[in-house]
Image 1 (cartoon, rainbow, N blue to C red):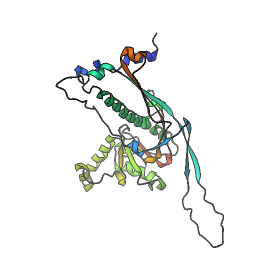
Image 2 (cartoon, helix red, strand yellow):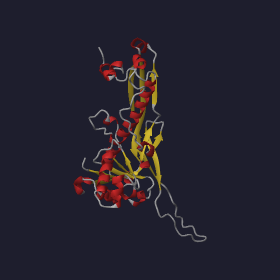
Image 3 (tube, rainbow, N blue to C red):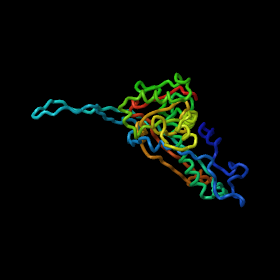
Image 4 (tube, one colour):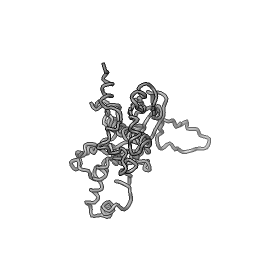
Length: 314
């Protein structure tokens, strides 16, 4: 009797020549020699966040801080016995494990328009999608969700919703949730000044839709900034001179203001990729088998360093 896992694998099946709609992608003299990617999305946030590698799957990230105004008067020959000491803290992490599996029939590599080049194209496509899936999970993961993808881990948005120290602004109480300058002023004012000093790292994190809504708001104003936004000219800075970073997987009802290095991804090892063309199954079924293994946990260093606008019109 087949197990549930075996039934699911059989239902999905390997990549075969029958997967090419109306022979699209198979060899044909009148076709081009390469596939066109359906969608390619660049997600720059992974280059802005902080990554920490750890050997242990469960542990803490140590942090150290120091208060302000530590200078004092110097008097010759006098020791006032005032010492400066750092404040230590820890942020807990628990790394979750993920995997991706795939199979390709050898006939595909003989009959598609890229032939052997199809394999590299396929592997690059999977690798790119894994990166986009990770970013999605890092923001939207929710261990209480019924969605088998989202409940893989607890993402940053869920962590902020449960936080006692993050600065949360109910966007629904400002202009009935329609995006406006009041939301950005409210978030900026809520953030303590010590975090505003990190201006070079500060970003507005929002969906592409909310970025477009902000630009639409500017174009509705008869100002130079409105004209620049309408015609795509002028500075690329966002509200209050802080740059916008778009997150494709970010929900439209949330906008964050924070230093990007405040978001940490802890991982135990690099993504591992394994492939085999050997073994009884590979020979008898004439297939190639692939698997990707990865593990990480998204955490926040300082909840108090984030302003979280929620309740916006989705």
